[in-house]
Length: 403
Image (cartoon, rainbow, N blue to C red; front, side):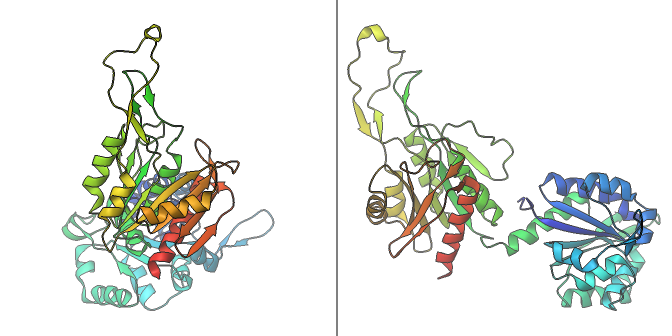
């Protein structure tokens, strides 16, 4: 699971041969959406170029307490560096640096930052097999773990000494997986499954025409991204759309008709903890689909229709005690009154109201203005981007789940 978007990762590199892997690590973290600030011990600069790391991270790399400037040296504030980060990863962590951490030595920018940082610390040891197996090293690692440092395992294989055994620093992709697992474990929805429906449904009249609506699916996608960033395992069931879904870090099930969406939702619904029905499902579908394009000259005067499945009502009927179900209501008049009726009639825990009376809300826009409604409360929000609205909705849901 990729939870690294906008996460601030402080990477401390110490003087071991495994430092050669860190440019790829930085590149992978940046590609995953993280911000990366690199700090190094002076000896680490013998193994990997600060310039390379600076180009990849798009930030200045620090290896000493001061940096030369035009008129005077500038202070590289280890306290500010530690306060900036969401996570401090030390990779590679040599036996020497590990010992310095244990004994609270402030003899390098990396060790001083470790002593002053308040964020979680992950340690990726790297050394020869005898150094790693030594009683003193193992005791030091146990002491750091007892102090709250997350000590990662080492790899087993060829070492720089020519020997083979335990002591290799984990590969960059594996380190990133550990970082993602850390954030997932500590995220508000870590371990939860979230189902979101989005977009319109198209109910075919003939091979080229359909009954549909102007929903873009943007609000549903924003909700899926917000759920994923909050640590959840996400399933997005979405109708026809033109959104960039090729590389999203969660499962997407594309559907076309209301029947297809209904089948997919019911199939997965029992496994989820939270469900948000943001899709704009067509209310009616033609009773019969013409096999050929209907000609205007044929003089069609009516299209017999039948109701589509009420997906939200079915979810309300099947809802289990541990599940939290949220619906959407797009209204053009009497918004709160109609939304509350829907909340009760469909056995929802909450409903999100957006009104066509509000400029910038509704279908096809980049913004939305909502009211989050439960039986006992209403929370109204200002007009915001749909990404911001999605985070507001999940903040409200999390508050309700904590009560």
